[in-house]
Length: 474
Image (cartoon, rainbow, N blue to C red; front, side, top):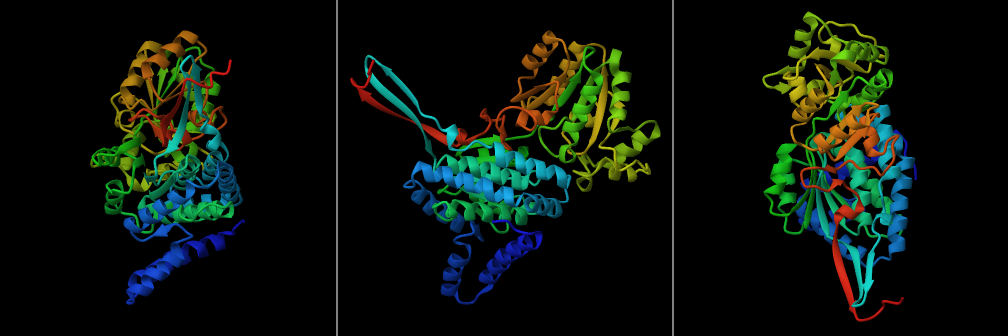
């Protein structure tokens, strides 16, 4: 079933408006019945208790559904999200005001097509003199998930496919600036699951998400496990819940360019990765370290491939424009590079994808994670220095790093030193997510808690079943 943009707006408005009217009704008995009728098949709830209760009921029903139906439900989610791909991207772009619409189309398509489903849950069998042991992936139950404004619908779809495939139900607390597009995604997911024979409300979401609703979800006794995709503050709060946490925390991904690199390819790949959705992804290149002997040639290559170098007194103007009072300007996060430059009087062409400055390793753009297509370039005397400074800038997040080199020893040294969940060699950072790269996709990269790139298997617990003395059949 495909929806036009007008349909999308009407669906979201209807769900939100009906919930609002329920909240203000004087007849409490009518309220309860109406709420069940309105949201029981849509997954949108006005409070955490109702959402968790509905998700628990859905989870219990889901346990009795054959695995074949589970697979069909995942296929149906992929299908309905593909049919509504442009509406998902458009609603996210218009509501959040971040990034680029065309990049959101590609990110949503990535998770629709490359998020693993039930195929990720293969059992393991051990047989020997003492019999047979079978290890299988079992669900946790109700998962509480916190999602960001940077990848709102992508994270909802990616998490939901993996969690539902694993046999769980999930309650989302979306970022307040992305509540409508996320509600639309949850609506689609529930339609898909039910069309395949599954229960309503396997995916639920809070209508008006707040810090308070997020804390209530994380501390709710009906939630077994938390999956948090966000910054250090929300990750810290999740750990304080006492529950198991899968945390996708911050990153500050460096890119290193050595003297053996194909400089044009390096420039193209770094710009492509750093400017995907205007640098709001946590895996995107945030700072560049280049060996001094090729630094000038590399920066010339950046300019050939869509980069705009800010020089002279404009550097100070740019610094003051994007960073003040110890923080990056929130109004400039995820904006186009030409728009950011217009703010300091530079009339750059709309075709540029990235602005860059040359600076030293201690600059705030190097040492602080930011989400704008504005990158610092740091000259380094040799590759060893470049790697060391890159590791320092990455801040021990162990998230993502990239390197451009044709020297295997250099690539190996960087891989060992950065110790990241994702290390991309001679490609854009997003290749590590399976976008124009091999491997599955995820929007929750769990470096703080060690799961790395999460998939359906990440949302399961291992259960072992043993048959003593039999079924070693060879």
